[in-house]
Image (cartoon, rainbow, N blue to C red):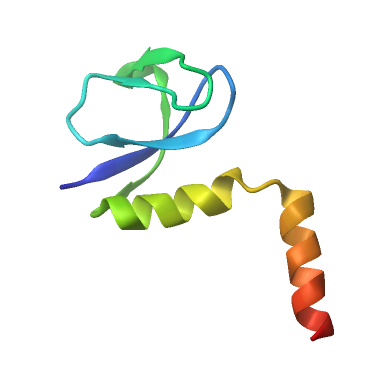
Length: 74
């Protein structure tokens, strides 16, 4: 099954919706949008792949920067 990684127009967070769905409820703010209203970031082939990408996209940049710095120190 294919999934679309989309950005919520209200809160800006990324989430996944099944390809072919007509609407989607944001799991973060609850906003219900039609497919025509969302920005599609990427189409992926599995839920697992979608989760990995979404986790990275929704991680604040300052947190990612700190993780990268700690990795360089070790």
